[in-house]
Length: 446
Image (cartoon, rainbow, N blue to C red; front, side, top):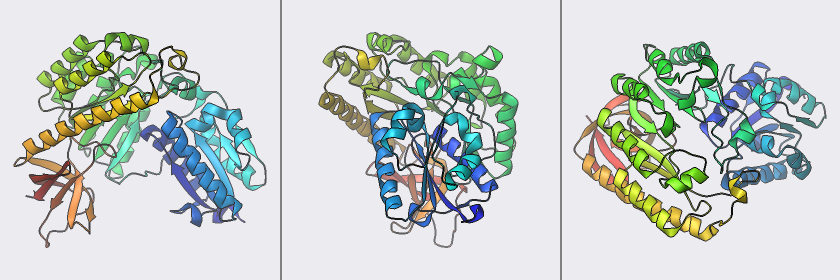
């Protein structure tokens, strides 16, 4: 079969950073003549871009892989290629465990994906890995999100070395992209119709420290704000100890930067944070949150917490719940602690029972649902700008996001419009909120 007639499906799991890798892989394959289809059952090749961050992500990847192996054994698909964090993390074990896979590709080899595919199609089993730090963040992308928003990766890897996290082992040391490369990519995305840039890295607030010997995120944001056609710029994954006054000032004064900040705090107890190799305690974190709310009015704050970290007592957990209630985060994610091979925390004593970890997670999530319901009830009667992201024919409602909703994380707003008013995906419209249903905001077009 000729290469140009080969049909490919790319399945990308996990975070937005992984999704950007998949978009670059797709661009390389498209340039080489491969055609993309929607479903594995329609394809000759499936490229599975895996996540290997926590146990649940690994289980999802393995489940996908077993399904693909079944399709291959049935003759529905011909080749399986695996990329991403799971293959990078487990390398030899992965190769030995899944002999049906035709190519296992480390993150440093993504630039060679077309050659790897050629070798695979010619009957060779391809297992290639290299130095993680040689993973390239540059190159064309085929945007897989809705056309009005895109992720903008500014760095890869991580130097924080949290004791529970395997990311430094998987992705390597923290490395920033040159600022001029980021601006060039952002300008191209804007020229292609992107209105919202979502700035991502394992730690966006560390940006520039390795290249410029300073925290350069504020400067980068200032330059991004100069791109005329951009409307929203959103910042994810900001570490509390590097949220400087300079960064706060830039967020506050620049209209294009949405007043939304994702700060993964993980806990509030100083003793546990120290065991996690993270800085801060309840007092310093509360002071940061209060400063952000004082200097950036109406800011939406998102955080994540870990329950059941080794040694977490009932008292420490209760303090975390009280802290979350006091800080009143508009958005909150929660993970039950996952023991990851090769991490310091996995070897710690006083591991918390898995059922206790999960139960504590459920308690925090239930409390957060109540807070969100109260938040939304208070918004009824107010107005907000919303970007249209689709139409639900069953509900006969449009749906979309305001600035306080990050894509693919925070849900949707549902709203009605007159039947003679046709809206398109990517339109920005004004909505008046009229009701709340199952923790979903309802509204009507103004």
